[in-house]
Image (cartoon, rainbow, N blue to C red; front, top):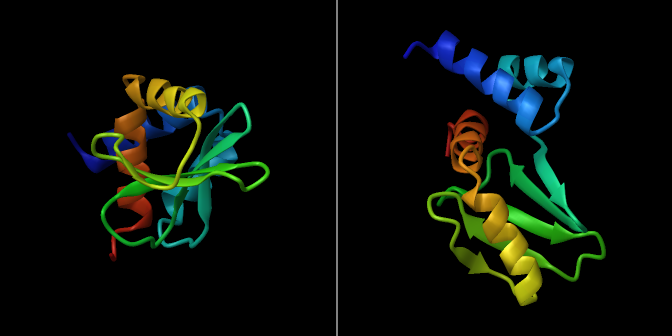
Length: 117
């Protein structure tokens, strides 16, 4: 699959699945070296974030609005790397991760944003 085709698929996924605007998607695809945090989605009061130029292994952060939860999960398998959370919040994150598109979209975002790590 060509890079251009993959970017079109990713753009469609981000537009429909992650609810980013076309302008935001175009900017992200054209500025892969842009250093910032990419909020993937919010589940209840939990923000799911991938930071650009973050350290390996590929992971995502889950941070609550009140900052009482600050956890990391592996993108590869959804395993909790660090942090603590109530079982109901952990179930929400696991349900999010089990969605068929989640892992693919997060891997693509990680690879675009962290290609130098």
